[in-house]
Length: 115
Image 1 (tube, rainbow, N blue to C red):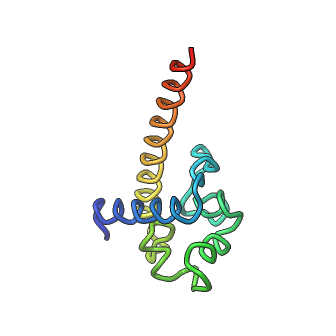
Image 2 (cartoon, one colour):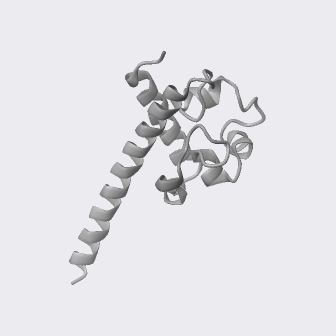
């Protein structure tokens, strides 16, 4: 079973790749609806419309169940281990909540500066 540090590294790689290839992707993610084990509610589906389309956009024509999506925290090759998906999802949520908090703080600073 992968360590938390390994899963965090995967999420970090996934976020960095999304930031490079699709800036603003995080604004489309509904954390209340996020389910990394679901082919209907994961990060890639919420942003690209389908898991396969997300994999194609990020990795080119590749096997959507391959190593690249797994290395970027979008998939786990241990697909039957719900615990790994739960842990991945918690890490994605933590990082996205952190971003939302930073963004809200910046928006507040900008609004205050304009007064």
